[in-house]
Length: 144
Image (tube, rainbow, N blue to C red):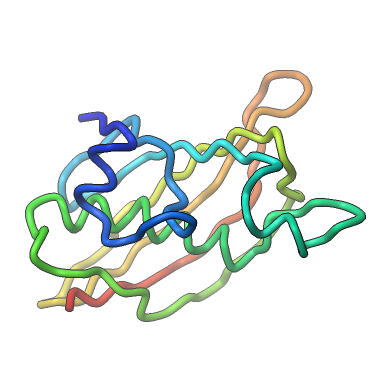
């Protein structure tokens, strides 16, 4: 299943400028989702992070993974909100700058009642056109 930006906005409670996902290219309810984030020089955080060298903050990379995962959990739970409950083992391997097109995968590992546990990975194409890992993390959600 794929979702357009407008369909994502119907699922996630986030609004501009804090919606971090441009589209979902793969989705299996309660299992995993793969999204795309097109990083633009116009993104709000580049005004101050950093003026001399624009870098996407790591915390917003984690938020992007969480929003991709939330689309997976909220597809049939639109009356709820998926809140980030925890982050473990976040690792950042490459800088993210304007012009990067990020492929963001969030895979649900386990769900217990209203809690979900997931693994996330962000990749992008390098100069040779091959996927390179940008960051990885483990996150948990609570459905509220």
